[in-house]
Length: 357
Image (tube, rainbow, N blue to C red; front, top):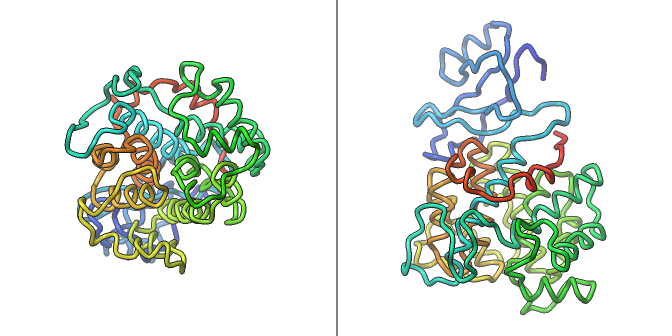
């Protein structure tokens, strides 16, 4: 990469996340030299010019069919990365949208915008334990310069539970049973009945690190140590990483699903109807529901509203779906009115870490 022309090398296996078309063009940023290769790309529609000004939020691909722009440029130095901001705010906004509707049965309500109330009577824009623990994860990664330190993360999780750190109002609420038990006893719950979604909801920031599968599993195991939970977290991080590379979500799922019968349900997820998708607190239900919502919608807003309106564990489903939709569509795709209503934005900003590409 040079400042004379920033772009990606090719567009193989790149599909538009909005319309699923493979008719995409590479966006050429900066001041490129007009070579014969570039001119052929411009004439064929496989390359378009993006302009001189380049930022961390500049997209790398343009859909020639619907006009959507997506993907992330590969800069060669670390900087505050808007893809992390998109994932974290995407999760937080989805979480806050879902909080008032948690435990509500599907089709007994309709979420269309940010409201307060619900079973816990929280003000509009309040995020739950999902985002609090995701922020604690980010803050630990920030403190250790991008490294994964599970002991430090566990300490920060306990500070959230017992001291109200990483919360808007100074007190934790909506605490999962396995999470509370694990943090009190000092090790993760490994029983088959401890496969709630409490680690999946906070794992997304690891997609922006160099964490390997063992480290991803270890971060899950702070609270959720059963192999189903740890494997689900590995799958989700792999999907996020693939999407950030510009791979279509369908292809990202296909390349991320392990050769494990327990995850075979993801291989035909695109063929499933809404009635076949469950939205309980079981980790595999949450993973499937989040992926299904992203596959069957065409924007960040559509995705998180679809997740909330599945009902039951609405906040966590929308938190996980929101992280994925943030990665797919970018920070600017999150409706401004929802960002304005979101509480705790200063806290969120304080936890964001620099991302090395």
